[in-house]
Image (cartoon, rainbow, N blue to C red; front, side, top):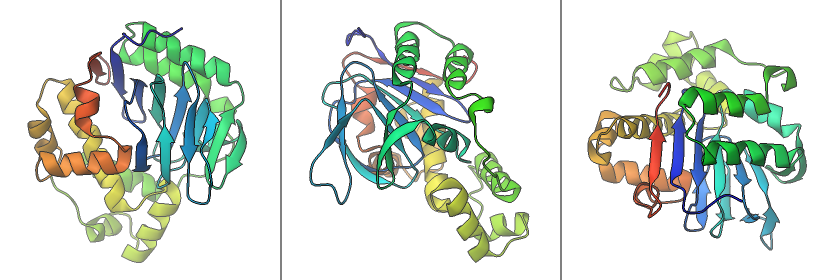
Length: 261
């Protein structure tokens, strides 16, 4: 059984992120990225619009942009934010047994996923070791055909490379020879979220990354393109359903692991 006294851990990779630990309070959020949630020691419960009651499960697959309420109780959860281009989501969607609207739950092979996440949580794995554990669970050969628009892939890369420049939608559209309305349409279709929301999501990633290298929340948030720490906190709560202080100041502690550490 996973020990609740263990420090929480946050792995930051370019393609995915993985948090393992408690979340301390119910979540009411709008998903900033497609996410796989696993309850490692006991069930959690979720509810979306149209549901009269919460449903208990040990595994949830959530598309980007979804509004959902999740009650984790004091469970230890593994929260893996998936790749922006949809490869992970479409691979995992084939493994889910049940659904309500856009929520997919009850993962086939759930016990294997939980065991792998417990192994990561209990160990002191490097960034690369943990990534290999996660990647092994839904490797390339498991992925169904899923088309990626190279133009949207380029826009995502530009957003990542120009945090300081804050390129306009017009600049992004020109870079891939698309009209603004067409880019907006294709980007939402590919990633599940609007361009502005993806940019904010990436800024949260950069904030966490810089904090993993020892910067304060305020300095990291400003360096990531937020106007101030309050803007960052509001975005964090909107997309993740919890104040960053509850993650960063939790009594069991947290270890942030940047890429390649």
